[in-house]
Length: 217
Image (cartoon, rainbow, N blue to C red):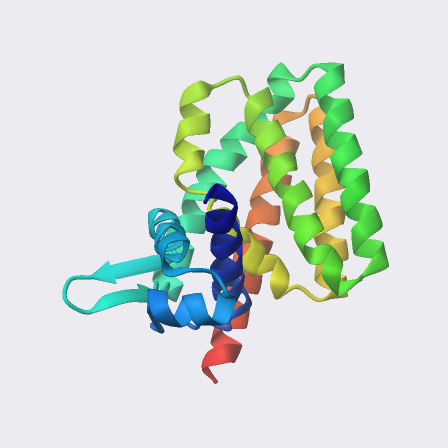
């Protein structure tokens, strides 16, 4: 059962993130079971998980719909990320141990390799490494309350959706920003680290807003 739920979850999430299930699309367990080849019970459980993540909205007496996220929602989320992750980068620079910086460097180098390869299938791997990189910085900040606050703000599916809209040049720029973050934190320069993190997050926000605007045209 658990394996079927995970398979259904990934299939439905992929449809939402890729744009196959567009915002406002009505989703039924029967239709999703047919398209995924998975029975309705695990599909329903997967839908509940996606609802908890904010990707699906349940409307009483109407059913489940792909959540709509407008420009205002995205701007608010990324404004919070700038404030929280900017602080995290600055705190990480003050608290950093050499072993922590070495792990950040390893992740940044791995992302650079993927960005230089510019292979479409590398996007998911890049997003996964990016998630590890940002969580490592928050861990280095040594503030459990910050970790809890960011857990409700940084939605992995939204980040993945951002990377899906990146071209080769944007991926390389993102990889370069990660390397500069490593340099700033390694230098124990909190002001520099916060500045780079702010630019990095705003780049992601602008890429996502630009892509959504293009899709509406």
